Length: 105
Image 1 (cartoon, rainbow, N blue to C red):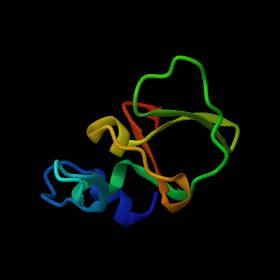
Image 2: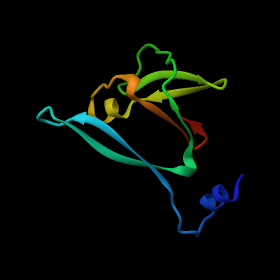
Image 3: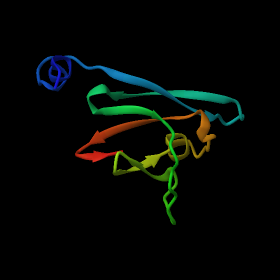
Image 4: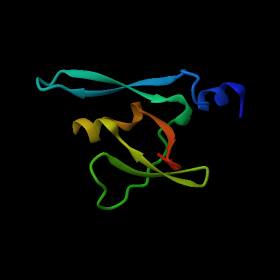
């Protein structure tokens, strides 16, 4: 691991780096608005363009399916759909590949 990554994982450093991203959705009047979110850089593995997604039957709202990323099956979640019940076209999106509690999402 690099020094910069190591220091992010140390306790007591009082340092935090986040990646900020926006989720767009229509408000109650139908006007498009966006909500800012952030994720700890130490939890982000990479940011990629949307590859081919394999859909599965009976998925919960917000889960689009799975992708095969370097021979590892990874679930794909759509935060706009999950949080705001709004579906956006996939061609405008990027995927943030992250790992929480040893689970890659």
